[in-house]
Length: 326
Image 1 (cartoon, rainbow, N blue to C red):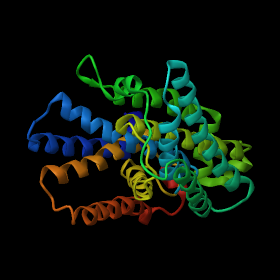
Image 2: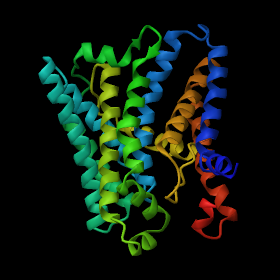
Image 3: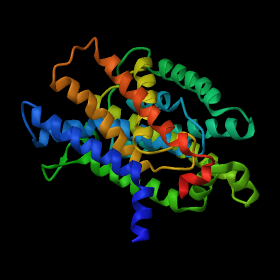
Image 4: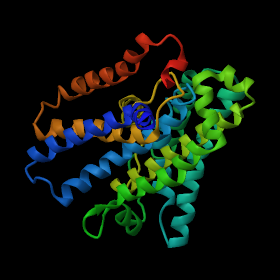
């Protein structure tokens, strides 16, 4: 019984995000003109998965008590890069996908190296690197354009067996291949420990530097997967500054909605995924209820403020970080 209660307490944020998403999605489909159909679910999934990948990337950095304000720009950069490289034959496409993912990992590794070895604050570092990444994206795509392997794009954005969205299956695969092994590895535990108390983790002999570097590198890779999917959805690349900033801010909201502490050391990428799906459903609800477009940014800003505030409510009664785990 105690183990069950501990599990519920540990997964409270994830379960809350899941509950919010389910309620909001039911309201959305109940009021959608087409109702609950495979097309409606597929469209919602494709949009939600984009933010989910960026939210996962943000989670890895936040767990180390940092914050990455460049994830949106890595997302945009890899979108532009994919519109150049993910074309041609099967081999050429595979090489292009590999190059895009490697570019995202390189961007994350640069962030991590500057934070760890340059000893700069993550927020300052990632603001600067994000500007550089957007500049490169603008050089690649000063105007929207490009193309992508349509067969691969259709396969990953369509439906399996005519029902299940392929994008959700891909998201699940990424969770199983990237998040689960990392969270259960020595580096993953060290990332959690450094976010909880870096001094205590260091004194315990944990590989803090390697854990942080791995977290930032994987964050860049996950943002690159999101950039790839954006290319698959749009068949084009675009250096959209507003879109990059929006995904960065929304990823922070999704992380907090998913129960990840902005103070580090607590949370899960799975919770951030449900937070992302819930936050994305807000935009769908505004569309369904024909909300005035001029008021939509204000409403989303209020939700973002509320989401970030959630992370502070629990801290009012916390005297030290160890109480998070009791």
